[in-house]
Each structure stands twice: as C-alpha cells, then as structure tokens.
Image (tube, rainbow, N blue to C red; front, side, top):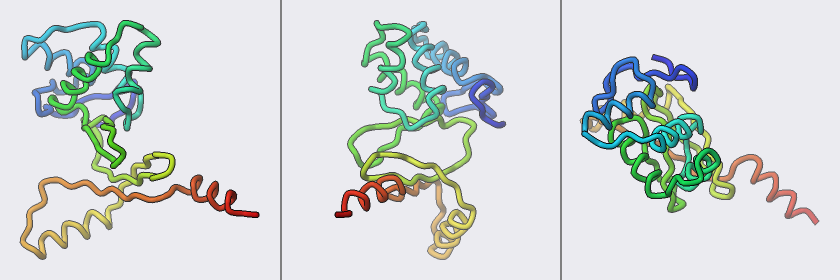
Length: 170
C-alpha cells in the first residue's frame, strides 16, 4: 500500500503484529495493547508528531515538537515511544555518523538510500534500480544472499559547497 501522511496505512503485518490496513498510530495502539502496556495520550501525540515529521528526526526534535502541544511530554517518554515504534516495525533507528540516532518511518515505505552532508547534516533519500541490481549481482557472484543493506554516501551538499566556495573568494 502507498504511504501518505493523512492516509498512511500498514500494508502487511509489521514485526510486532501491526494490523493490516491500520494507520501507524492505530498500529502502535494495537501493539501496546497486545503487550499489556499502558496506552496514553502522550504516546499517541509522540507517534503522530513522528509520522508528521517526514523522517530523519531525533528524539530531541520530537520532544520540541510534542512540547508545543503538551509541555509535560518528557524525553524519557519520547525515547520509550520511539523504541516501541521500532520494535513493532513502524520506525527505523538510523545512525548517520554524527552520534545522534535519527528515526524514519519504516512501514509502507520502499527501500531507499541516503546522501548525508557532513557540513550541515542535511539528509537526502534516493533510490536507484541500477545500484540495487549491481549490489545483487555482486552478492550472487560471491555466493552471498543479501538479507538487508544500507547505502549511505557522505560528503558536502551543493549548498555547503557553494557557501565554502564563496568564503574562499577574496
């Protein structure tokens, strides 16, 4: 199924048993209920803020967003909620070399890779069928069965390269 913000749906059961056709927030609620955990308005607020963020968001960024709606949201509650989202397959925790964990939605999204700017931290997602085919071909050539992979390219984005070139001018 396709994923868009207003109608994002889970197309199949997630790792934690997310219900088919459920919104991510509803799927998290079902996961929480299955495990006998406490359902709270704050967890729902955090999940909603996460899915509205578009991805590559840190816990600190989520705390800031959530506190606009509810100043009592704690950092610990955001960490626990993001852990639950990752456990049930709705979020992926990613490390991009800067020491911060960022989360991106996992359910209903096609595989993609990342370009990461080492200056400003901008993260660009991309997908390329030729790169995917080449990786599979190399794996087959070595008798290797790929279960998953991540491709991350680090460098400077166009904006940072331009800014650096302008700073270097006399």
